[in-house]
Length: 87
Image 1 (cartoon, one colour):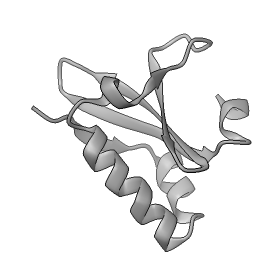
Image 2 (cartoon, rainbow, N blue to C red):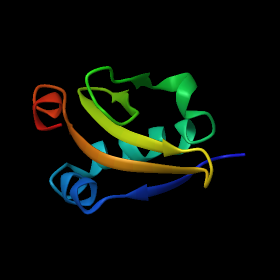
Image 3 (cartoon, rainbow, N blue to C red):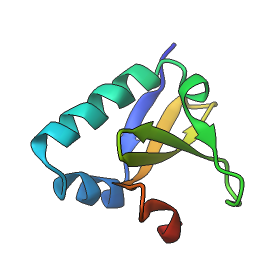
Image 4 (cartoon, rainbow, N blue to C red):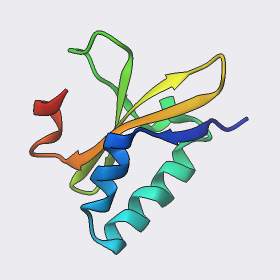
């Protein structure tokens, strides 16, 4: 069973700042990954809550998983050069 995807306001704003083509690539990748997120993403080690990072070209999608409600909560979508500074 696939996870349902929810975007935080920060992630929505991040997507608004990207090109249409990049947004399409990211959303397509999220759609694929929501079937089995742990198979495609890497867990972040230096974060207190279980957060995962998904690579989409030069961008990273940071998200949390809620196994009880089967929700994938997208926290932010940023360029790889800046994403890890902001967490």
